[in-house]
Length: 177
Ligand code: SF4
Image (cartoon, rainbow, N blue to C red):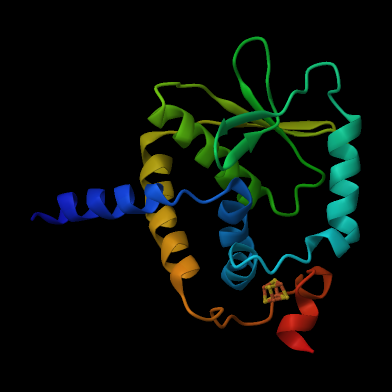
């Protein structure tokens, strides 16, 4: 089997157990957080930042917003009348994670024969970031999906160095106290 075929098989196996959008975002933020979350150790409801995000989510774009389930694991915020996929976020502090999450949604849609673009909306900042699934980004995303699958299969959470934002993470006590 050539390396390309091996890589394609690995991606296919990964997508059989598709990650959620949150898991994809957590891969960028912290692999350890991804492991906790994917093992149903979920403490996010205790985080003020997450609660604030939910309030913004509920109060903005009400006329357009209609959460859509695009498969068993993927719930997107809304599609606008031109078919662009939107995700509403609170702040740009983890913009890389937001972008990867949206790229993943675009990727899943593409697997279903739907090609579109995405926009990340930051209503409190009055900013919009356009996201497109280019071939380069798709290749990078496929490699990340394989890595996510490997992390989820670990029998214990991966070790990471402490991040500056650990103190604001809901899992702080589990990791560092
Ligand atoms: S406290 Fe830090 S190391 Fe632990 S899960 Fe959160 S971000 Fe990761």
